[in-house]
Image 1 (cartoon, rainbow over the protein chains, first blue to last red):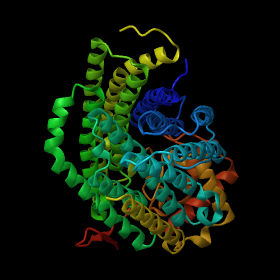
Image 2: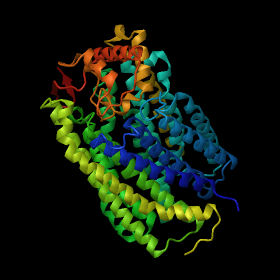
Image 3: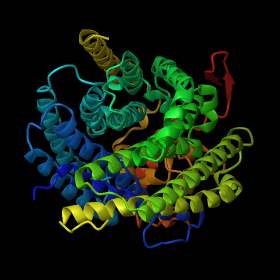
Image 4: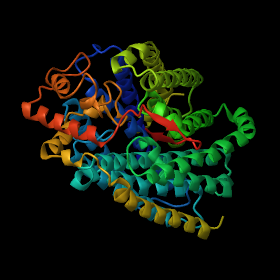
Length: 446
Length: 138
């Protein structure tokens, strides 16, 4: 029986997520108990955690795009071989990167700490992915829905921003710290925007399929929001580097563009009533439940992002745990929850597996545990960050004094990370069981 | 919104992006107050900073990890300085592993930190808040 390659990406992504969150939880405990697990230092645990979670986002998004393009977008994949080659390049490169981290072989930059040579297979696989997507998408008759525009944008801009992130290899960039940091965060910030395009496109696709209303993806409002998000991807990154002494206009453009996200926040509040009644009606459908939760997290994280984009607030929160709350809230609360919705949709669509009542109960319990502990985790980071910001700027305490003061909050943060891990296991286990049965051709017992 | 309008907006934003990027790569980041300190030793130190993944725990300009302190102005901080940095690099601490660095590596890392220190200030502790939400460093 021919196996769907999309599901291979998604199941590998789910495994990467579980292991990535495990490493993150261990790292959090090292943060508060420095003697914990001395065998794997934090220097190794952090990149292990970050790279695996980033791998999850890409694997699940890419798997979905391959499957949805081939099945639902009114076109067929130009090549069915390329996804398989892409998968194996991803797998082998991923294993090599993990080995480098375990052996303490670094040399790269924050978030891409592996030796630079390992970026070459990533470039190659992305080019293959892009060629396949565009060759397939251009065969489609009629207008592209907004999610196809978003996937196309995400694919092109990941390639551009990933290339930018390696400009440090040139002395012109590397030997001027101000230029180097600015370009690093320009590429990093826009790269997050590019994977958000892949993920949000997936969310709109899933909602379009569930509601069977293609108009959602062709509406004027959907495209206005897409272009607003695109402008933020291109020019909104400098709120990460307000204190880096680059030219003032670099930071001012970003400040202005970041504030346009108020329009997105306004739209969420405006639509809240309608969304709530839709959510109540469809809450029993697993993917819908996750999309609804991601809406709440979008609201919370967007509000936080807007606040920390104001320079007068940013000066207190920059370099504190508030920034971590922003990053974790977005990658776990928004990206992961949307991608879990997509994973549920894709796995049930491909395997035709129906979750049993007891499995659904476990998933529901996991859903609530995951979200409640994520909220505690997020609030702890904000509280620790605000306290740190005040202690640094106003009270001018030393690093050691600050760490002692915020340690009780970080202990709660570390334990809530464990709660997130437990919730996630409960959500993912039934999915992995279904994919295992499908991939290894076992009969699915209802 | 017609397909033509969508395409126009898309390509207009792309054109702005390339103009903006070329300006950021040149005049937007031209100032470097410490460039005379970016010696060969300091350049080697920068690569060592990456080789040992110092960014996992430390920050420069508030960018990086949270396990250890921001190192931007460490070599000029009262009560710290070059010898303080050397001591940490040689022996590590309860939180920081001993990387068994060679003398040359320590020298290069310290040279890099001296360069970083000259480029600016982090965290910013003296500032005025303006009416539009921006700040002016004192």
